[in-house]
Each structure stands twice: as C-alpha cells, then as structure tokens.
Image 1 (cartoon, rainbow, N blue to C red):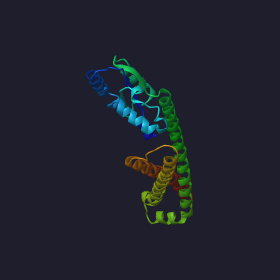
Image 2 (image 1 turned 60 degrees about the vertical axis):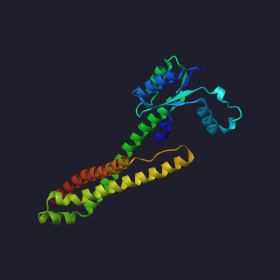
Image 3 (image 1 turned 180 degrees about the vertical axis):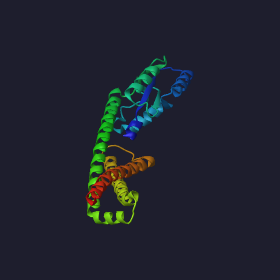
Image 4 (image 1 turned 90 degrees about the horizontal axis):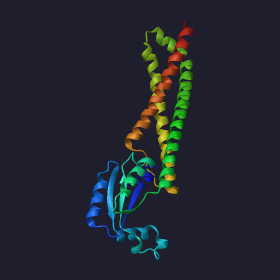
Length: 241
C-alpha cells in the first residue's frame, strides 16, 4: 500500500509559451509548499520518452507536439489524502502559467478509501487475534497450574514467595506470545510476497515495526499468563486451605 501511495502525484501542465522565469517561479513556489516533498520540471521531450516507454502500444501516435511541458509534484507522507491533494492542486491551478492540473481525483479518493478500510479492518482483526491469544494462553497456563498443584503446595510449604511461584508461568506466557508474534510476522511476509508477485509492488514492515510486532506479541502473552496464573493460583491456594 505504501508503494502505491508513493505514486500519488500532481501533474501541472504549462501553457504554451511559458517563459523560463515563470517556470522557475512556479517550481520554487511549489517546492516551498509545506505539503510538497519534491517538484520537478518535465520537458516535452522527456515526457514523450516516458510516455513511449509506459505506453509502447501507442508509440506511433505519440508526438512531442501533443505533450506540453509540465511540472511533477510529489507530496509528503501525511498529505496524500484527497483533501490535501485537492488543496495543493487548486493552489497550483491559480498560477497564470498553468494550463491544466491533473492528479487522478477518482483514483486518489479510491486509494484513500481502500487505505481507511484496510486500517479499520486491520485494527479490528488485530484486536480479535489479541483477545483469542490471551484466551488460548490463559487456558494453557490454567492447565499447567492445575496439573502442578501438588508441586505448588510443596513450594509454598518450604517458603517460596508468590513471585517465585508465578515467574515460570509468566515467562512461559511471554515466550508463547513472542513466538506467536513471530509466526504472525512470518505469515504476513509470505502474504506480502504473494501480493508482490500477483498484484502490486509492496514493502514489508520496517525494522521498528517488526520489533513492535514482536513486543506486542510478548506483551499479549505476558498479560494472558498474568491474568490466568493469578486467578488459578488463588484457586489452588484456597483448595489447600
């Protein structure tokens, strides 16, 4: 999705006879916009070469005379939504040297809708998976605690602290959560490769995102085990009493 978003750009077509000073002014102003990451001039010859490369089936009909000079404007992260793209396009269109501004309005809006839906769906699925993981890890810890009730009773009799009794189960839950996070990232990596081959170019997580995913998995495992071990140890101790 990030690679697709990186392709969002505004194409500013210049009017015939636009002077070099006017082009330089427009380039400078566009580059100074807070939303703009980069602005570059595209001559008719460069535009024609690119069009012939991207649309080889139309090489015979493409001619430099039909391609005016233009300026390509790329926006920064956080400014590629329809609202900001429209605002920047309107500002650029107000210059007298500009003949037309295009940015694929329908495509940008559709991309933003897909991104929003994906974010909401991803957050919802993440929450569901987290709850399921907590339940599964909690059930595993419960069975372990009940299976070792006799050992726990002996540890208490010889003076073991609550932390000493709890810590193995907490570590077990943390490790299970960490492994679960690693498996989830691995499955995402496989899915990413499939998307890359069959749909569009995509990018796997940044290193910090991988670290955050593993940390989240470990935290989920720790929380699940902490809740479960606390509840079921109390049950074991009540039965001892």
